[in-house]
Image (cartoon, rainbow, N blue to C red; front, side, top):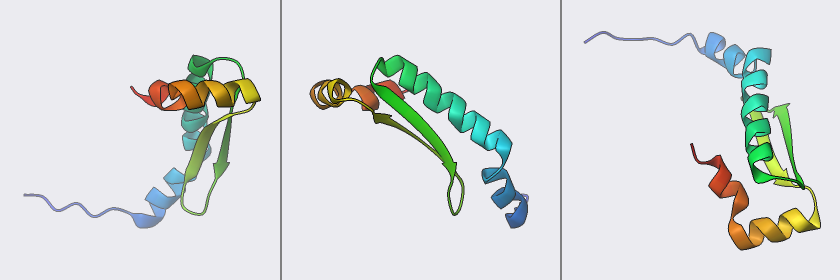
Length: 77
């Protein structure tokens, strides 16, 4: 069995890279669009990695998500 040793600084820079930001932004945008009007998305570089979030941006979206679990249902692959 081969032993693999990760380059920790390389992995860290990959997780915070612009390329990873674009991947996360793209996926968050797809989920937001599947949810419909009233939802938003955001991406940012956190302490350890790029993060993306999709959220309710209106009262109607909050109600829709509360009644239908819209965000959870649209995050499934």
